[in-house]
Length: 327
Image (cartoon, rainbow, N blue to C red; front, side, top):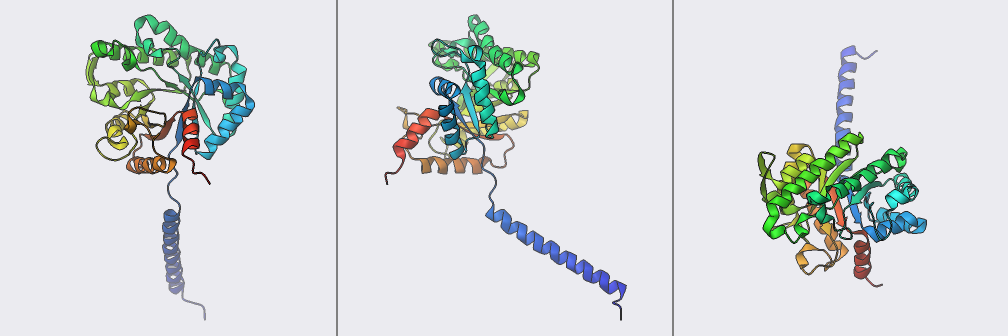
């Protein structure tokens, strides 16, 4: 005898419900076994190291292999004058070759502009505005004359007015000039029609300085993030938690970035330092990984959090070699 239609209907509905329960249970265990993807990591790469990997294919390939081993997916690649050369202008084909390779390997490249070598802290001064704009214009011209796979994906600016001797007596004036420069740089970007992201390496303590600029009074962090596309926060501490930790120093700027629809990369340091707490140099790689995990967990649900940046490539490699266990 054929099964009544209503019995077949209820049996099918029960089977569907059971499948839904089983699928939910399976997804629960998959989720537990597969943690969320790790935050993106970038690395600053200064003059000599950048020029070497741009000019020397073997050095570039070795750097890419190292970054891939360390889950670094973005390089802040120096792109200005060094020594007697300015390769971005004189040898653009060398950058094109290397950036093509980076992109083929799944890495991103941001042009790193500003350096101790060029004393770019002075670029906030009005008399240095022409040099500062020329620095960015060379990268924009390079991108405009390159194919899509050869272009920089963004720019990271390292211009730190607090290094200037006049900082103690003229801090507010210099910070206002810093913002004037940011406005001029972003105007130049808009005029180029290019969409590459531009942002500064910014001290974490900018959120604690209130400044009136163009008739508005707010924190330096908010002024800067209002102008730029993102920021890399120089959050140089050797521990995540506590009132003087990485998370605490980033949390207010992270909130500003979220409110403004911008992103924030958290920078950490592995270079030698006279002040122990600002660098992981005195610790080992497991310590670094532990503190980055704690920081990532704290900001995992924060839409403005855009990962980490390590300062800097050669120091990172040297530090790992120094702290690697001897078999």
